[in-house]
Image 1 (cartoon, rainbow, N blue to C red):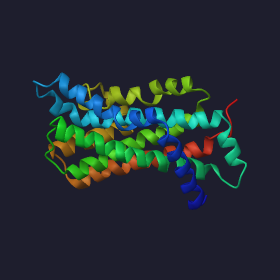
Image 2 (cartoon, rainbow, N blue to C red):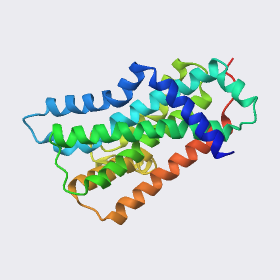
Image 3 (tube, rainbow, N blue to C red):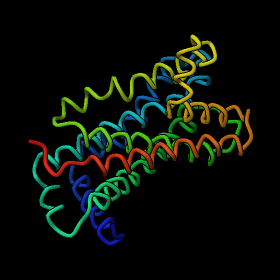
Length: 244
C-alpha cells in the first residue's frame, strides 16, 4: 500500500462525485434539512434540546453509510475495481482511498449539519462547539467505514439496503434516542454498550450538556476510532474484485 495510489484513488472518487449533483446534495444538504425538520416539529417544546445532539449523530451516519456503500458497490459491479486491481494497486490502497474521499465529504457534511443545528435551529450547546464538531465528524466517518464494509459483502444495491437492519437499525433503536439506555432491559443495555453509535450519541449529548470531562469524551472517540479502523481493515480483506 502506497500513499500515492491511495491519494490517486481518493482524487478519482472525489472527481466522480463532483459531477453527480444529486449525490452532492444528498451528502451535504439532506442531513441538515432533516435536522431542521425535527427542530420544526418540536419548535414550541424543549424536546429538540434533548434529542438534537442525537439527530446530529443519526442523519449524517445514515447518509454516509448509504452513499458510501452504494457508490463503492457500483464501481465493483461495473468492473472498475477489477481493472484497477489488475494494476499494481492493492485492496488497501482502494479502500483507504475511498475512505479518505468520503471522509473529506463527511467533514464538510458535518460542518454544515452542526452549523445549521446550532445557529439556525437554535440547538443549545453548553460545552465546546469544536469538541461537538470532532465527535460529529467521527460519527460520520463511522457511517463511511461501515458502508465500505457492507459494500465488500453485498452483491447488489438492494443487498446494501438489506444490511441496514443488521448494521444500522439496531444501533438507532438501542442508542438512547427513544429511551435512555440505562432504562433498557438488562440484555439490551449490555448489547448497546458494544454498539459504536451509542458512543457517538453519548459523547454528543455529553458535550451539548457539558456534563462530562474532555477525557471522558476522548475515550468515546477512541472507541469510535477503533470501530472505524476495524471496519476499513475488514472491508479491505474481504473486498472482491468484481461482483457477478
